[in-house]
Image (cartoon, rainbow, N blue to C red):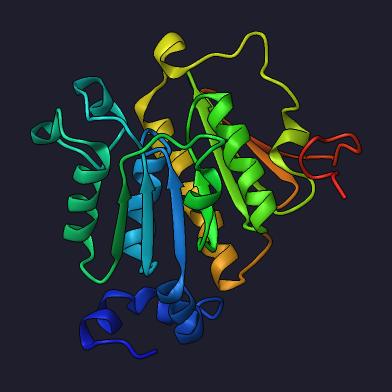
Length: 246
């Protein structure tokens, strides 16, 4: 796989990194990352993955851009209001990096279509805010053997974890919490979405190029108000209904 002169200049800061270099950049170009939800987490993650030169981005979201999204979903602007998010996102990402192939899927991921939407991906990023979708994408990733980077946020705090086999996301969240909250209900500071989305993109890049220690089996919890972060281990649940089978 060769690079054009434009790509060599575009990715120059990657090419001089020992952990990426030419081979790592080739792996990025050959990779497909699925982004489930093009919202607060998915929008900034998509921008950084496109900028990094990930060859194919599969955007999965059935929603349209709303004015209230613009406070944190930085892949969109005011002219996009009312457009499908995957359509507006595809335009923004192509404008940022025309070398990236975009696969827009204007559907909501469900248990019925999750396997198809995950198929062919090297990494999946889940930035959705409902647990039915999170459980469905987790089950599909476990079945397909695809690493899942999961990002969540609310108010002033966020978290990012990587699930690659065991433990899986259901080991961390075995059932829908009774006090489950969404950003629409509790609010969220916009810049926090950028932090969590960027972290999720970074984990995907590390997984693709084989750099460093991904957050596999760990959860990074960031407190934006305090300016602190901590990492906790996620234990495999021996009774997990998803990853303990077989």
